[in-house]
Length: 141
Image (cartoon, rainbow, N blue to C red; front, side, top):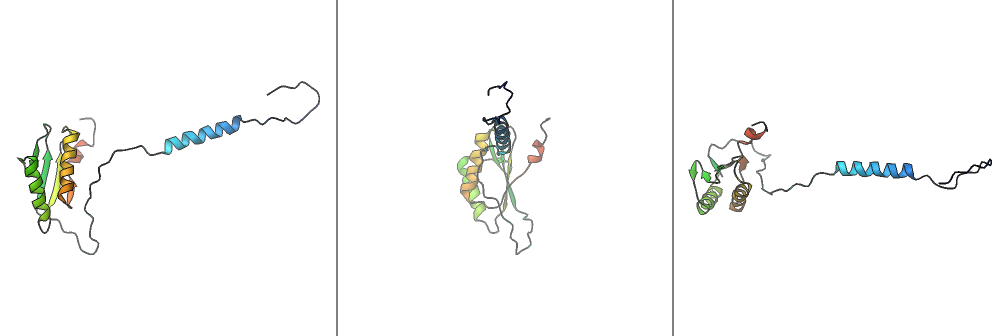
């Protein structure tokens, strides 16, 4: 911009773009803040409630646990990968299908927990739930 010291009052012929740039920067910051963070996810089909019938709790349930030293337990007993896959296929084939409860320990490795979840998904189990997660809701421990 140039300053004019003349006594004539002429309209300014240049456009002041500073407010326009300020508004664009504010809109850009608002857009960046409102974008959701990118998260990694694992697709696991969860059971859907049947709307036409009353949901009754199933008394038969199986617990798959992953311990801190990455051992896999089926109802408290250690199992191998092949044994776990066979047990999952047997449980998925039962009518009515028993509830499968996944209880990975918070200190277990992510890779082992993800591998067990993959075996559960490949077995075709539909009644799957996570248990024991309330232990990790506080970070103070």
